[in-house]
Length: 128
Image 1 (cartoon, rainbow, N blue to C red):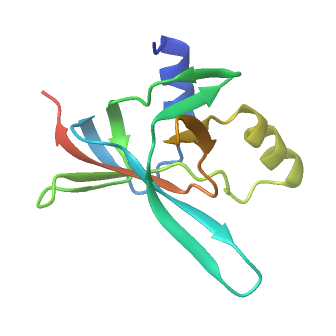
Image 2 (cartoon, one colour):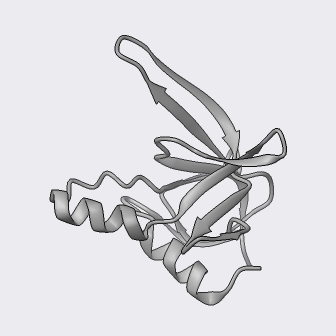
Image 3 (cartoon, rainbow, N blue to C red):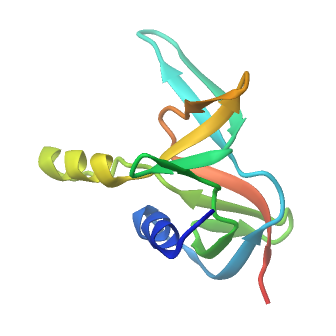
């Protein structure tokens, strides 16, 4: 289901700052926080990343990561920054938003876009 173009696009689009260098494999569900901002209140919930939409096609989330933003050996937990807000110019931000993958969660049998995603997290182990 995943092709090399999708893997390369996802890896290149993920902003990795202060990253842990090694290969990691996700061994559990990949989750993220989906946040909605209101005038006075914000609301966030943890959701499972069930699919990624890229170029109008759905793909399974990747399970192998060359780099992660953080790795907790004690908890066997990896975090990868995927935020689209990088301080780019308006034109650069718009171009990036058009080419960035859309992360989806399955709810009531259909896919919903995960709003305001900044990070994905998952149980992981270093690959060998």
